[in-house]
Length: 461
Image 1 (cartoon, one colour):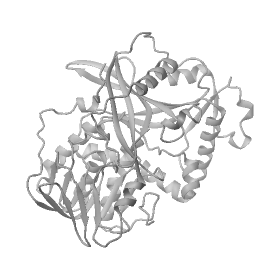
Image 2 (cartoon, helix red, strand yellow):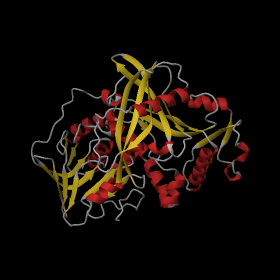
Image 3 (cartoon, helix red, strand yellow):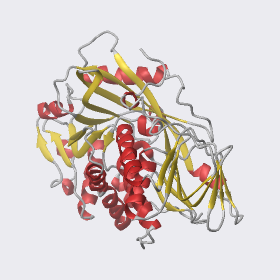
Image 4 (tube, one colour):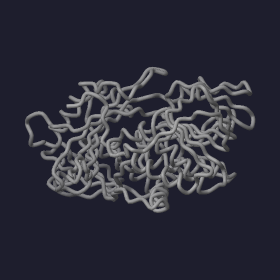
């Protein structure tokens, strides 16, 4: 058993790749801080769609942050229900926001094919387990609103033996189907009657760290004259002027016409705006840090790739460890070559999340807490009815830092107090597709394209 942070996705990266640290002062049109999926996607679309020069900087190594410490789950969901989004932003803006993130499926495929990638990327139908009548009604209400908004509704299937079948409101009768409990258990890969309904949704799996590594190789090969990557280069301070910015990297500086923050948004750097309008304190209070915990075990290569989530009927006190307030666990399964020429499936499980205090330092070497491990282990045994009664042989246990905005929606666009500063960050709990869309949107703004206002726009408060 490994007590330290050990990610299976970073384990698959090229260990012979050479990292270059900044050792001189440089200038660039665009400086992107954070070389994870958001930063790499932002660099990709700017380089593909403009003639700008781009420098990508990371305080650690490429894709070694949240991008290398996730479950690899690709989905266009938000950390909010669609009902909550409608209440927060209105029907039109909520629907437009959902459609924009949905468009990232095509953006991901475009990146994949443009760079001629051959790394595994699976797409299939995912399943969500609904344990209570309340969970079912919430999902049906979301479906009703999606239908009204002209969006694709998820499929909801309810067991014919569920005690609440006769209590479902008449207004939702066209929004679900009745099936048998055996069918629900088969798709959720569980037993019993804990989950009496399920929802299906389009999903996929990818090693986002490996994806970033290969995209960067493509960018260096194709745009090497105007693209560079510097790792182990920690940005301590960003000074914003009217038409340019200066990034303090310790012994060296980076001067750029625009700077795009693609970090978790919860790091100890300082933002100084020369106009005098405060950005630093508001920014650091608008983004909160949460640490998500995951573990993975290997099994024989027999079952196909899968992704499932399981809503949990917790008490209010128990749910406080989950950032959304609506606790759930998630599971992904995919082929994984752990030993050379020996193939397995890796099953990844996550769910527990713990908050950081304001500007509390997160370290990737932080010991995996036993209570998080115990929670995940209990869930596996209770829900999946794992056949092994002894200690499960976890090959990997890892955690990653996530940055959540107050709105629980990603922050994409120009800082209202100084447009030299831009953001593509926040709400990284479900981050791959939103990060990719954010990269595209940033490139559109830099091109001068006039975009409609959206739920992602940074607000002047």
